[in-house]
Length: 365
Image 1: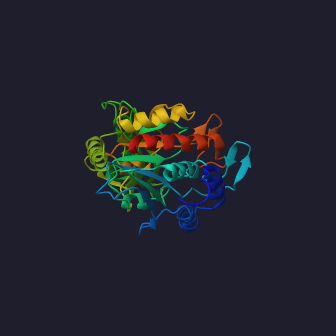
Image 2 (image 1 turned 120 degrees about the vertical axis):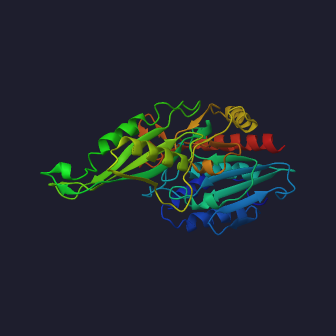
Image 3 (image 1 turned 90 degrees about the horizontal axis):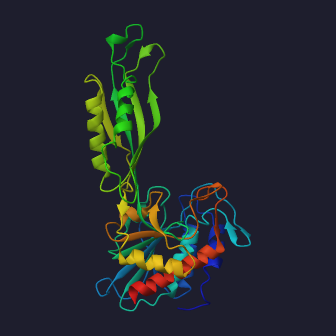
């Protein structure tokens, strides 16, 4: 290590000033690389744009491999940096440059001994997660930086999206029985949506899955029986449901519910990376207990709970994985992350850095 002691709040202030809302996060990535390089850490940027740095022996010689992960991209529009006492405002302050600052601080402070600690920072979590999908780190334990208010989050719902297409036969509206009304078939479809999870047990940590119709299109003329209708659905899943398992089950239920004359096809939205599926880590796992105790020791609550948003943590499961960091997705006034008022408290960033440093000391000692 070289240079002055790392200050996560100074790093955060510089990072929030950098606009990383575009698909090209080169400036923010360069700042991260320069920060690591200035402290004598070897760092690489892989073909997917991931920034990766490791400390300790190689994977085949280490006793344990702990991976610290978060992302450098932010949602638009860019919100300029401001500092008001204990509060840092601006885009990315809590999602997720605040968590990044805390993870980086702990990474630079740890002495891993016979263990290995890797910092892996992805470029496009807010879009398609192509960076995370390309990571192949073979870690034993994963800590994913997101705004959790210093709570330790052990599970999160997945998010799938698909479009149901209903095919009918066009006809004159004056003779509706001479056609097959695709829009009318939606009545039965919405019944399937409402009842889809009625006989499924709630997950012990995540509760019930949700299925929400979001966009509907159908019909071509006001005096014509519509021959086509489509419905977009948002699925927030719980383990052990997979994207394909949901797709096939929902299509089968719709096929049973609508008239035989109506064509049915349900296709998941095409994307170059896997959907973010649900994950759950045993709340009694060593990783959870260690981070929870460290959070309390640093001034956090140490509470263990689910995370309320989908996250790249799903790509690292079933390895033990937790989500942790300073800041909150929302407070009593409303949305914080992704909102114009996005902020993080300085003391939370410092406490998160301390908690993560304590956690690494406990896991790799």
